[in-house]
Amino acid sequence: MRTTMFRLFASSLFTFLLIARARAENPVCIIGSGPSGLSAAYDLEAKNKSVIIFEKQATVGGKCQAVYDSASDSSIFHPLGALFFTNDTYTQTRKIIDLVGQPIAFDLGTDEYIYSVVNGSISAAANVSTAEQLLIVEEIYRYIALWELEFGNNSGLGVGYTGGVPDGLTVTTEAWLEENSFEILPAIFIAGTAGFGYGDIRKTPILYMLQYFQPDIIEAFVGLVESHIIDFHAVFEKFSKYIEGTIKLSSPVTKIDRSGEYPIVTYTSGNSTETQECSDLILAFPPTESALKSAGLDMTVNETDIFSPVLTTNYFCGAVNMSSGVVDQMFYRSQSALSLTPPPGYGEPILYLKMFNDSDIVTTWSWGEENQTVTLAEAEDLLVSTMAKVNRAPTAPISANEPLTAADIVDFWEPVDYFPHFTSAQLADGVYEKFDALQGVNHTYFASGLNGFEDVEFAVRAGQYIVSTYF
Image (cartoon, rainbow, N blue to C red; front, side, top):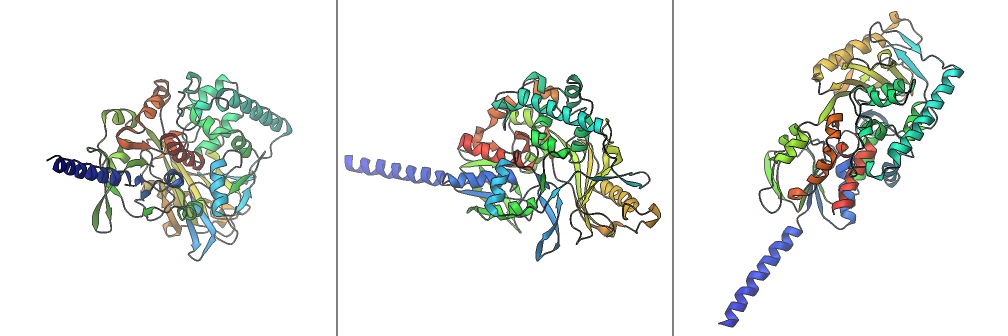
């Protein structure tokens, strides 16, 4: 009798251990193959944890995409999104760049052309007087001193904002600049925010701008340090090859079931629907309410409370065939982005850049207000009508414009849920402490630009932070 009971007990224990082991061996499921997702996967595998990545797009890289003149020659690229980095700020990204061996395309100077979206005029940016140069340098270094005092020396203000956000950093960017008596810096901030989709300084909390305008970044905007142009899509395409786990492209997740002990992901692949049990789940995309529901996440009350107010901005990237007279490796900046007041956010092209003299494709960036609805079609129509006004060499008269139509648009897209962020009131209410408390609940973790800031470096750091802190 005892022998029989022992055998039953041993059999049950063995079965239990097998199930537990099987569950423990389930991979960490990562949804999203942008910088956050790939960085998390790479670091998890370094800890001998298995991973599987689900990506709804047909290629990795998230918001780091590009257009190429030739499928066989990737050296001529046109970035649809991020394009530059600096050495001091992009420390973790630089490690990836060095790992994969992606070369720098060129270093971008500060000489620019200024164009009018109204009449199509183009002129070289005016030279800055000696007095203005001195004022700019004085303000830059006074800003860096304040940055170090209020932001850089606070270790809790890195990714995750685990130490909470001081009240002085919850105010709007405009209010902080005024409080600190900056005269020139607001124009630099506007040029750097509108051109790259980072909102309106009258609304965006200074916390995010201090994260964005790290000392060498603000120096790069005025030419005091070099900014390096690189094909970020190629960087992360190559980086993905260093990940041993499966990356399922064109495989949108449609349901996330967290009702059991471990999460179960349902996804589509081709014409089939598949499921995957996960040991843990990393959502490596901006956790807006719409994005989470699109992935089939049955949001908890706390998740709804934190993520439903997340704001994003309209931001569009394009690649346009233009006149061979467009000068390469120099920004063309909209006149509307050169003032102490942000430009209207109705989707107008704010910047364009011809990357290479050997190609007539020009990269464009268009900007809209936070949570304002500018459709892709509306922004594309505005792109065509604007670029048709400036389709010539900068020294040529307006009458020399070459015809430009919708057929000249090589690609045009809107990065989904760009620049996720909270409002000043939400920051003051301790939203990041609440966000941090969600990490790990129901085996679920969140890694994206919302953890720190929406750029490549802080997306990389977000993925690394989740792994180093919780795994």
